[in-house]
Image (cartoon, rainbow, N blue to C red; front, side, top):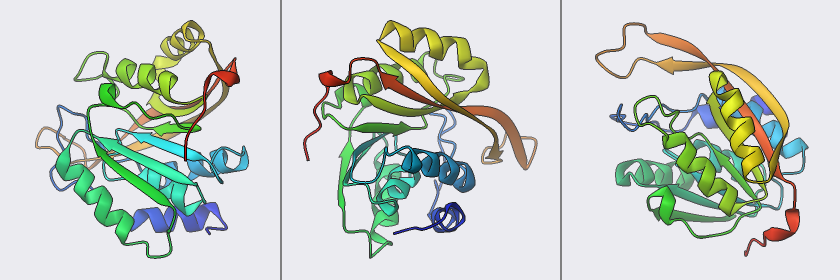
Amino acid sequence: MIHSKARLAIELSKLKLFDRPDAEAEQYPTDSEVAAEALWNAYYLGDIDGKIIADLGCGTGLLGIGALLLEAKKVFFLDNDEKALEIAKRNHAAFKDVTKDAVFLLQDVKEFSEKADVVIQNPPFGTRQRHADREFLIKAFETAPIIYTFHKTTSKDFISRIAEDNNYKVTHYWEFDFPLKATQLFHKKRIQRIKVGCWRLERIDLKRFEAKA
């Protein structure tokens, strides 16, 4: 069990990242300190310990593994990139003391059909694939009554509208200077920081969902 946000960030910083990130798929790794803060907030709001978590578009598994380190009961790791999912599996295997249930699924997000207590996701921002973030949000609404989701801060109005349209409300919002490290030839700066928010969304009618262990 991790007992501090700082320790969680240190453990997450040890994880292997993408070998060759796909720019078109917006495979930008979640910063370990940003992830640790979001997960720590979720933990203290009672949304991780003993919960079934879905990490949609898990990439190399940072958010889901962080949830397991904070005593999540079970985590679904979902990604449609086989190489990314293999890295996530290796990252998970590196933590010998994480004995909770981890399920790795090579699927497109539209194909995911499980229920969870909480979705924690860092989806594509829709910069290169138009509406990619919307697809992840729609699936999250179908999956869990509580959602933690990362998006550009310029998406505030969009997040509020789509949440309301799907019977969810925004209960918490945290803002980060999200570091994007240069991973492509077209990147001109070694690290570029962008404004990113993490939204906590909660379904207004919680009785709809029943996650299965």
